[in-house]
Amino acid sequence: MKRVLDRVDTKILSLLTENARLSHNDIAVSVNLSRNAVRLRIERLERDGYIRGYTIRHGSPEADSAPIRALMFIYRKDRMRGGDVIAYVRTVPEVVACDVMSGELDVVLHIEATSPERIHKLWEEVAALQGVLNTVTSFVLTRSKDSRSCRTDMVPT
Image 1: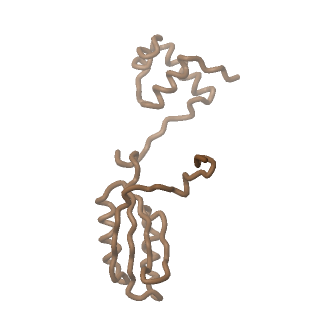
Image 2: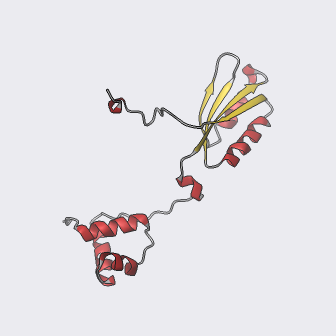
Image 3: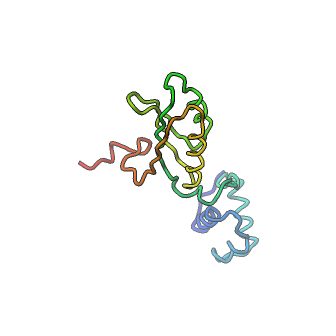
């Protein structure tokens, strides 16, 4: 049977959420208990399912910050035979959307990367593709609406 969390359990969970590598001794000092009492509480929290594991996050420190967004406009040499460009951008994880356009413009890439250098490298790779005539890349300064996070019930009346 799961026990109800008390103030100390909640504090232990909060400390471990911030830094899962904290020693039992460091936690004990923060919650004013012995090291052994903290160890027993952590074991109980694990057994009761409040702690289900400890996670490693791969990547660079910049990965935790908001992504840098850019739009890359691509003009292809031959619109009817430019499939190699589309095939390539499908393999790039930073390209979150690829729109094939009507009119003068051919393709718009929506890019989210961890650094401007990565966007520059991607620009070099796309510009070097055989089917690409020209590219224009613009960094997104602000986003006023995101379809993934826009909720109509939060619009003030």
